[in-house]
Image 1 (cartoon, rainbow, N blue to C red):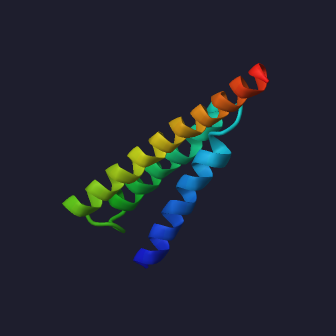
Image 2: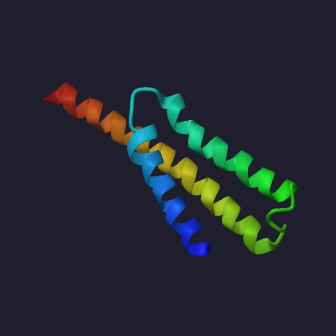
Image 3: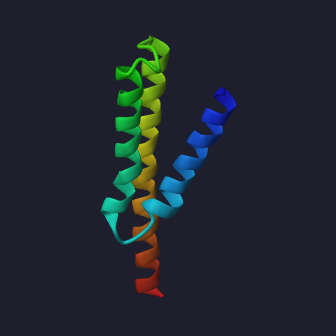
Length: 87
């Protein structure tokens, strides 16, 4: 189960950086980080995931990475626009 979570997380973050956030609609990239926040809170509130220090740290790391990848995707888009402008 842990391997599926890790693979899903990596796929989600790559999708965030190269597809959702790497376009002219900046709001589209925020969908994944917000969904991950609601999903993690929902898991913890419904007792599907325990409130342990380890789980909370993992949740914080994942949500932080989601926002970092969103920013990187936006930077990729802006760099592509700048390169097109100067070519």
